[in-house]
Structures are given as C-alpha cells and as structure tokens.
Image 1 (cartoon, rainbow, N blue to C red):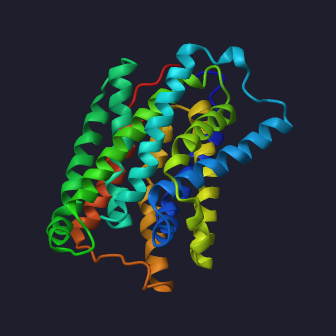
Image 2: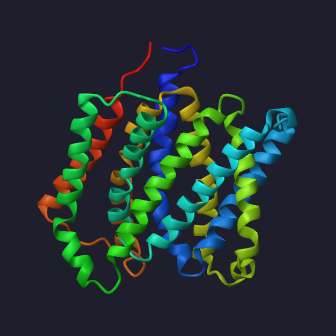
Length: 306
C-alpha cells in the first residue's frame, strides 16, 4: 500500500460524505418550492468557494500560478462542467422522481466510476466486479418492478426523472475521474476553491438572486443546509479520494440510499405535507439492498497495487 494511503481516515471521510449526500435531497426538495435549480446551485457553489477561499487565504495556501498549466486548466474546466451538470440535474430530477428512488438510480455513479477506471486507467475488470455489476443491474430491475408502472401512472413522477438521474450519475463519474490526476499537484481545498469559483461565475448570469428574499424561513434554512452540505460533503469526498483508494471510497458511498430512505421516512412523519415516501413491495426492498451490495462488491473487487 502506498504510504500516502490512510484507510481509517479515508473510511470516516467517505462515510461522512455518504451520510451528507443521503440527507441532501431533503434540503433540495424544500428549496425547490421557492427557488429554481440553477440559483440553488449558484448559492451552493458560491458559498463553498467563499469559505474555502477564506480558509486558504488564512493559511497562505492559495493555488500558485505556476501550478495552473494549460493541461491543468483544461482538466479543471472539464471537472467544473461535469460537476455543474451533476448538481443541476440532481435538483431538476427531484421534480420528476422520488428522492429514495433517485438515490438508488444514482448507484450507477460508482459503477460508472469503476468502468471509467477500466477504460481510462487500464484497470482490470475482476470477477467480483462482474458479479457486483450483475447484482447492481438485477437490483435496479427488482427495485423498479413495482415502481416503474406506478411512475408511468403518477402525476408527480415521470420516467424522465430516471433518465435525468442516469445522466447525473454518468457526469459525476466523469468529474471524479478527472479530479484524480489534478490532486497530484493541488490539495483538496485548492481544487475545491478553483472548481467552485469557476462554477459560480458560470452560473451567475442565469441565476435569480432576488428569489432568496421570497423564501420562507424553512426554505431559507434548507438552502443554508444545502450550502453547508456542499462544503463539507464534497470537501470530505475530495480528501477521501486523495488519501484512500477510489474503489474503497465508492464502496462506502454505495450506502447512501440507506441514509436517504431513513431520513425520508423520518421527514414524512414530521412534515407529511412536504415529503412523501411511496410504499414498496418486498421485491423492491430486496432490489434496493441488492443495488447497494452490488455497488459495494463492484468497488471492492478492484485489484489494488501494493
């Protein structure tokens, strides 16, 4: 194992990311009732960029110009575009698909990350990875065995939501694959401040900043939560990728739907007018668990260099 690998630290960071991402849909759903997806994303990017900039400035650790070569800038721009696409599609998708269902579909993200590693970094596709991939696909089929007909008939959900979240999973994997080589020359915080600053500037012309004044108290606090979630979740994820194997990080992130499901159940009991969790049959529950375990096995099945 590389001396830079820190398994316990990487695991805790990955678990924190999974919990925060699992809770994020609740905040986004509340924000969506008073603000559009692009503006929500602008505030999330802008807040994270500002806080990380202040931290780096205080430590005198802002990125140096000589590090920002032409190749690095191309990679940063690509990572920013993919992350923007992921953020915006995640918010838009929640208009068409229930949060728990969305998190199950998003398990295609670590699977896509694994495939990207095989294609770009010439990693081997092992037998455990194949088994995990088949479990993931079978799990998705089982999970939506009941949900898909209901989605077709639903007035609040649409198959378009599944399509959006599949796309969101793919672009997230592209972002994760691009940022891996960038972390060889930039720290996690340096990369974060650059990506979020560029992203916020890209979104600014299309954002309705005045809409923040019309938010209710709960919508405003939900927006604050989403901003803090962005700061800590992606900061933890970026650092986890730096100190631990990407496959191990992906395996821990596969538990994300469990946290979303639990939090949605709690939120539905507290605020039934704002949250609704559709009833699932036993096959859907089995499918959801199969997706989680399939994603974990796929990630852990990667051959590691010693």
